[in-house]
Image (tube, rainbow, N blue to C red):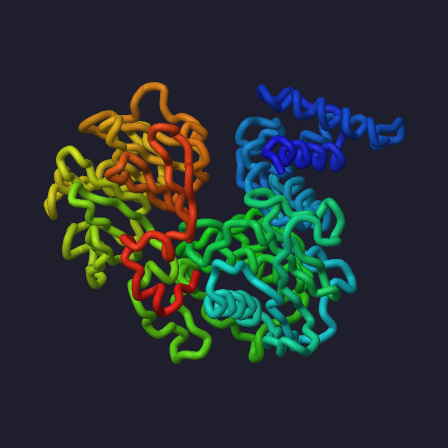
Length: 517
């Protein structure tokens, strides 16, 4: 589904919630509203019986902005339109609309909004028992089965930790109360629930007692907090729906319509806990188990359901060959440097790989989980990027006395990848659908940048790394795949799976032992 179509659908939803006239909007919003009204009129939604109240749509926009943690203006501005395009849960907000209206009314009246137990679910939208079984019907083939099962088990345990519910995984041949299934496109749930590939609605679920949660198989699912869409968070959210919970208007709630990011705070907010306890009661004894911070749920590919402590035994070959990497770069001697967590590997031109080495031993002060790295092929300096900060090292010594605030020069926060591009003699940063060319010797973006990634024909968005090759081509990485960009044609001419097809990545042992991709 195109971004424009997704926007139009969200504007249609707002129109149906409220009135059919609207206050002034920013450029682009007016045209969308005209299209939406024409659609409603064509299919008979406009009639004399529908009230034309300009403030109703404005109030609906206010509610959307409030639950999305945007400045509440009632105007369909640029930030609101952009929020509408974000990937989100496909479950309708209709069940939550009354709760949002109650909260917003109290907010504008200057009163503190009060929680009411009756808002969490309609009568009958709960399970009649507290011991529920579940089944994982299928999963994305590029993710290892033990890791996916570990993430699903942890997602169910989030809810059992704070309620009287208990969950167990049903055998493959028996019945199950809750079924988790991945589908492509239309899957007999109606066209409104058809999946649209990467972006848009990632998943949807059905309230009790149907016990179904569906996920878009074509989404870029990941079990990492930094690449692709985090499957653990989405599964935990959709499980909440299968238990009878609608979307929550509370800030930082797991059940908010837009999926929560993993961070230092606990996965379940106070609103999530009160919601599930209002339906099923508190845990045995009335206590609530300690909730772990979200940042601990970031590497399920290293979990194992059958080993003590939940960790998987060491696999043959480097760890990155069996999962993913954070960043990658290459120096003038064609040594490849691959970064993951707090360690890095050196891979010689012949594919021989070193043991994992701590980042701090080579580059003191460099944090773990860096997001992008590049080596200048002119002076050999290493550049590292994470969040809004940048580091530059000459050998193992920092060139700058302290990390630089790179966004001051127009660089993007949390870049996807970095590359030294020999034809330009410049560093290039990639972020989403755009790229930035940096001025020589500094951290300033060149004039007329950023530009659209379409300039690099066929290269996908959200790449995880890029390497210049001696023949002038560039290799781009994302998840388990790579794309080779022909410099002369400026388009991708080949692609494949890097673990199996690029021996200089050092994954010989991983292949002989069976790579998990």
